[in-house]
Length: 514
Ligand code: C5P
Ligand code: C5P
Ligand code: C5P
Ligand code: ZN
Image 1 (cartoon, rainbow, N blue to C red):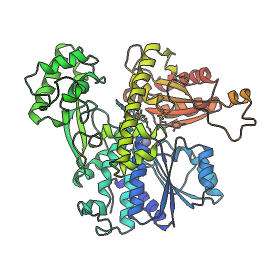
Image 2: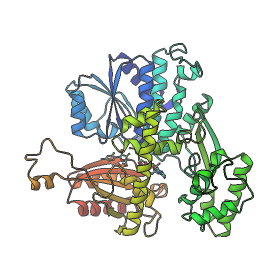
Image 3: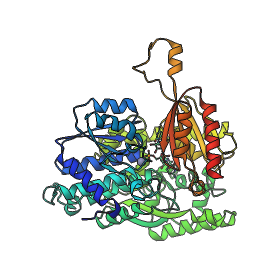
Image 4: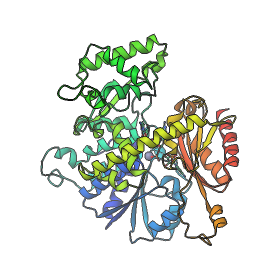
């Protein structure tokens, strides 16, 4: 069987065989939406194939993290959504016989090679826009079902439904779509290439539905006025950013957009959600929005962005974060990026009680942090170098979300979309076991590290931008390391080298765009 992505089929089968040969597997994954969905896909596939495993998450797969993994008893380690960029460090242990790595990733590979390496970039597929870590894990899961001879009976659950899709792991396509959307692989309003093939399998398996719909964030959970007020990707004058404007726009439509029943008619809770509207009602609101945008001079290219492909997880309840791929991925970022990957994994694996409640609480904090972060950057502004712009959040934005903030702030007043943005944030004081004297404040200062996140646009990538190269080279020039994707990348550097880093990055970006 070829699997969803024919180019990857042979390698996926080899990786799957290696896993079925293992007595047990250590599964290591990355702490973001794509990493969590990768782990959720891989863990369900391992379980269904009867391969015992344990799961760990890492913020960064650095030499220390890899050494800790090598020190475990496991002979086989499955890395998902990272591993390719750290092959130089990983293969050191392979040589020593500590463990065999199996990798399902989509990041730019380092120089070393390893056999069980499933990465779209090795097969001519773009890892930044066509396949995510969750997508690579999904391809692996399909091969695992195949080589382990998984059957419908074996994977039957008590409700008995959907067992055919479970037998070949096609039901896991829903999580793969969430991972791809979480990594912002949808461009021009939809997923492309290999991702599209996964979507098609999800549709066939009955776990995904696609439709052409309004492209605003929050269609499932945001009350209508908030959906419109908070939409910032396409700004509609008089509505975006204006509570009163959004309310009066909706009031002027001849529709029953408030929920019937008790309540005093005020407050957000009384408004219906987009997902609850009928097709006709959606059409009416969308047409009025477009008409308003046109009349306020929003350019046609921007208006096009108001509509895109919506990816709906059809098994999830209407009006929940879980039903919309984009809202689901944000919910997962709200857990994993705050040291609660266990919560996000629980949600992915079907815990709809405790884990979901906890995730929703974390989501409120995450949203507040993003909005405070964006406000901070927009108010303080960025420093413009010739080819890049940058800011230093110090300890005011958490290093795990500073990249999201940077990306979302692009296009705000004073923050250009025609230059990549570089963001610095202090790494939180993690005691360094090798530091000579933990109590020596000077020694501590010297060991302090800074997290760097960089974000570009697909337009800049078409002009030659590759932030993965920029982050890697600029970081190594100042004693750090980095990598990632062409459009989004990151690094860690020793504190005090920020200006030198920016200078080097500025040069590199200048070369790439010339
Ligand atoms: O580590 P990983 O590959 O999962 O993360 C990819 C990162 O790149 C995400 O933070 C994602 O939001 C970011 N990205 C972006 N803009 C894009 C594509 C990806 O900010 N166009
Ligand atoms: O850049 P990175 O992948 O880390 O961003 C993670 C996700 O957070 C992106 O998909 C971004 O669009 C998303 N997001 C969010 N809250 C919003 C809107 C988008 O967290 N309100
Ligand atoms: O952390 P941030 O969201 O900025 O990461 C952007 C992308 O760069 C992610 O895909 C992440 O995995 C990658 N990255 C990396 N090496 C680092 C830091 C980030 O490959 N040191
Ligand atoms: Zn990823």
